[in-house]
Image 1: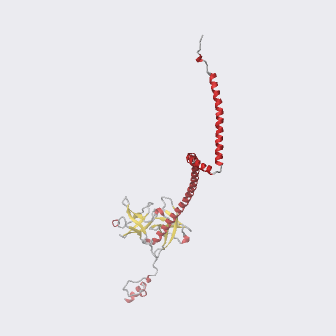
Image 2 (image 1 turned 90 degrees about the vertical axis):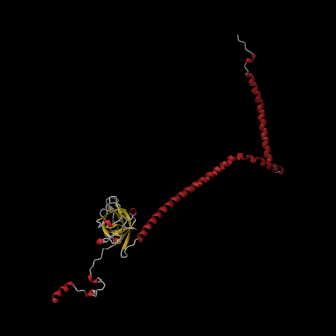
Image 3 (image 1 turned 60 degrees about the horizontal axis):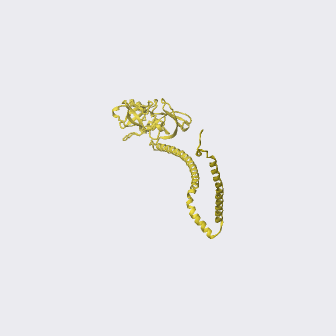
Length: 323
């Protein structure tokens, strides 16, 4: 048989009684606090609405004391306003950035056009600065295309037979000789470059005066062939057209003598083959043939005029009679 001590008896009825007592005090306390809060709010409302100098001074003192201490409560509102303003400013900056980018693209297009015009103007000025024989006239053409083949060195101009272009005429850029006309159409003409394997022109090397042939071999530096005396030629000597054969005018700059690693002499061309945009085609109808020997001026000291020169057949007929 087990004996239980009174201290070990269950305490549930006592706990329930204490809880009911606390509930009896909590309810009236809450109602009292709510009533006091309502009275305070009503009092604040009445004080804030009363129109009296004393009450106005009291309200001013309360505002001076409370409002500065409420800045922490206004911080989120101020931050939200600043965030909205920053977003609006960012949107305006983004729109301005897009406008500036589009304007920059337009300016870049204008810049490219201006650079192209400047380069074309420089090429034309170079053409105008070339010193030529005053008796020679020329036609300026625009290079439209090249052959695009390593075995055919030529370019196509936008001038042709309607402009009076003829086969064999020389073509120059702003510095030196480029090639000759080889084939003309109504509105186009093909220029065989000096580097083409089919190109071979007579030249003079200055200052030695040696005659040679400049022959292309599809490289950037044509060969110097059939040289009379190679010992008189030095790298850096000027190479100009000789005018032999009456195809090219004499004195057109071709380039300078250069020594190849193999020991053969070549010509470093003066023309800029990397940027052939405009070419000047020289009108050259060849050397004039002598048709009237009597029109020649006799050497100084001769007393006979051109009218006094007798025909050789007449002189031969008179010789037996005089004998």
